[in-house]
Length: 404
Ligand SMILES: [Zn+2]
Image (cartoon, rainbow, N blue to C red):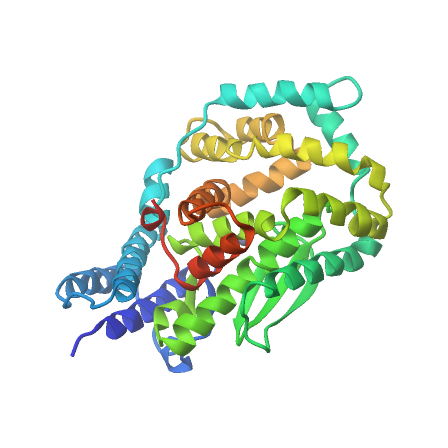
């Protein structure tokens, strides 16, 4: 008899098939080995037909009994519909940027106008020392806050141990949960979490570019605790091992769940390290470990806060580039102007946009959406309560429209 579990299995098997056509698609899989496609690679057309058939059959399933099961069904269906869109894209049928946000990530981010970013640039002009062009001034200033490569592992270990300690006070993780950190080069991202199953993650840090001091906590929390590693470990524990909801044994990168994954990983930074607590830890532990003068910390983080207001410029630039409104060199110019990237960093960022397209919105819009959703779940602001609703969301995932 057809059931939601059968539907989940079909989704997993077809996702693995999509993965044979696009190596970046399946980010993690730790479900049954028998479901791995070994004999045949299906053509994209038949994958698409099977996905569409699954959607039709899903419509004939009886209504789920509990709210939790209803949500399971709702999210699974959203994921399957997005998989159809992704197969279409693999066949060369690209959507406009805003349609891609909606159809692939179940997200409708507001576009922020360039004038908003221009105001932030003026604010930065006043904060940054020196004269001349803002971009080179900022990058020169930031050079003084790079973690020396020889100290990277110690600084990052201190950050991730603290992030882990703080997370474990609030979230019950499997006793065997664990991670390893490796330094890598030649990637379009600055760090990556590879979830391997059985509560284990490999976290890679890319050393192509200097890693500035704020990235220690940002990456420790985002990739590790309470970010990607914790999210995956909680899904495995609650949804795969306990409920046997096997659709969660696969993680499709270009899919609606990424909005929650990246959004919660980014928002998790401030959940684990509220601003004032973070500044204390930076000054007392990380700055000294990195050999950077802690008296420079306050000003540096004041500038970081202003830079954060430029985060949606990424979406604007990706939209203009992907919709064919501007060419590569204009995109690089804008990434330097509004993202304040060095020329080399701007080129790396453009490679990221070319590879991941509308995925860029999952970081900034995802973060804001998760933050709003969680705050709406609190009767009054209490930090312990915030951790509780945060953990609850990670163990019961929702897509963008389900968080609205
Ligand atoms: Zn991430």
